[in-house]
Image (cartoon, rainbow, N blue to C red; front, side, top):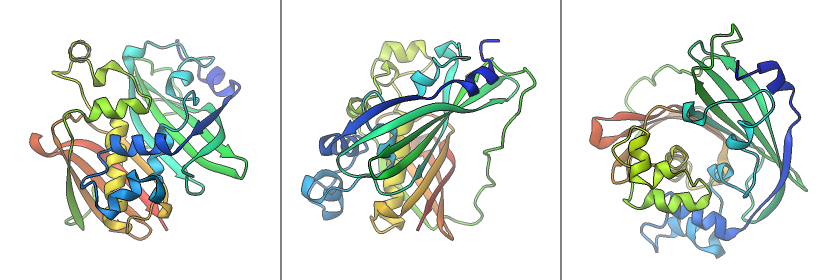
Length: 285
């Protein structure tokens, strides 16, 4: 069996120093579509260095060389075909607001291995701390098709009941034609998001937008719409990647207020609301 769960869970964590500065933060925000209108005071918080704050989803791209998914797939006990790998979900827990500039230690390990029958699920956990203490914990849920069936723990269900009633707010966010090309400059160089020929080999008509770009766009919409533009209110953010979206399309983001949280559903408006993000929750103060 290419995945040895016991060996993977027992493997020594991998650590490394990561750094980022305000330019990295600004580039990330621009990759999410921030800055429209360019002179809007609310948008300047994402784009102008003198007013800059950091959207918590920046944690998914902070620091070149951070232990991440590719590093985790080379851990002891894991030997898989990358063509069978899917990014199934993402969770961030914030311990305090992310500074505009930083130097921190990132420690990555495989926190769980689940047997879903036709697939295995690896939970890649990255914990990040600086000199003042913990900053964030990042969990990526990775599906590896064809690697289940060994009789292991199926793990918890991540499916949530559909929110009842009409959403409290619905907003639409256009995806620019070149947005994937800009977003990839934050560190995800997968040609699936840029090269039409590679996208066709992967089974898509054209390059698709990064799931983590949709993830960031959605959090920005929640912060701007329901949290008064205050990024420091976000405590955690989790989602399941339910489908793809293409540059040039429009995200339809529906939000339901709950006590201390916001439930969110994201779909592709032009394709009869085809699901893009599901089981999505933002907890907040």
